[in-house]
Amino acid sequence: MKRLIHILLITFTSLVAMAQDVPQTNLPRIKLQAGMYQIDAQVAQTPEQRSIGLMYRAEMPTHEGMLFVFEQPSAQCFWMKNTLLPLTAAFVADDGTIVNLADMKPQTTDAHCSTKPVRFVLEMHQGWFAKKGFKAGTRLGGAPFKP
Image (cartoon, rainbow, N blue to C red; front, side, top):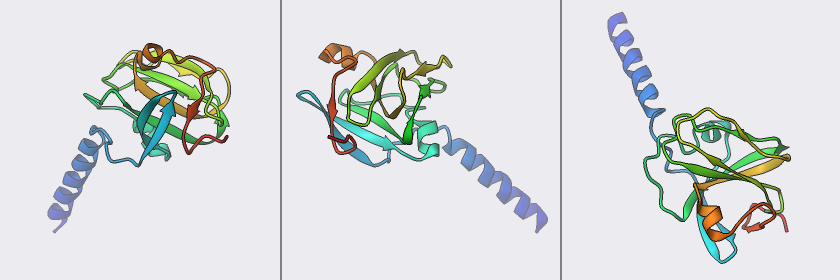
């Protein structure tokens, strides 16, 4: 009986460890606006969801991204460990204004931080904001942002 319990425990632990290397693709989604463009963003709002973010994702449609939501404004820093796609992080104020942008290289541990306290960070494919002409000061629209 002890052996069976031991085998089940090892199997369970292995499954949990394997599940951690899988991209999270079933998070809630929200529509955001950036000028005339619509963004389909997954919402990462718990500490676990935020820590996994877009890790292990091999592909993502061009118009999709991930919105990280924090409880209160503070300096936010991101890195790209286990993240396969090159991304740009938009650090966003409560009213939807982009505070600053940071291009991030895949699978690095370089810190990319907001220049001011923010509650939101929107990650998109690297270059998406630049191609659309969006920069610091551009305002995003959508339900999370106060008017």
